[in-house]
Image (cartoon, rainbow, N blue to C red; front, side):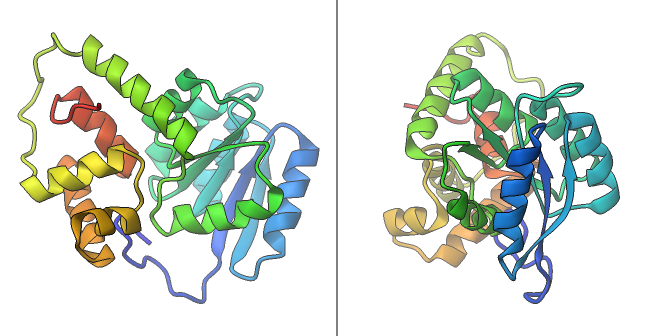
Length: 232
């Protein structure tokens, strides 16, 4: 699917996953958990960020499960490299770190999800499906930390004039963007605004098209930076 929820491939095609972690045991555990799912295919494994970028360019996975701390090239830099060369790949950071700085840098780099390594291994396939289906995967506690970082960034950027004309979003699109910034998924946004999930998906797609961005969280970062949106 696209970020807005549109179907990109046929339903019969498995979700192609690249696993990136410098610990072989973790890679093996993830691979075994995902290989047991009929709709998910592990297409490759990498032990560092540089190898991850090389494999992503060759394999073009739908999802990359990406460790943050790795030798040669860390997960943040690898995420930037993959999003630059294979923008259709969605990246889920998988890490022991719940530090605000790591979370914020991962989102700025283009990650769509952020899972801590204490997550139950059986929950990973559902996370892969959710991100592939257009969800941004951040738990409520980490979403609160992300909002704190947005607030800090907004204060730092308050004196900087916009560099280019900011694309105009409709009032409804701004409503949707504010709720995305609060960590809500499409279903929660639809319930809040009394509209259908498909309508929410259409609004998200229009927002991303207008801002020329790839993910919901990138749109939030952009909107805060350009002072279109205040996080409270």
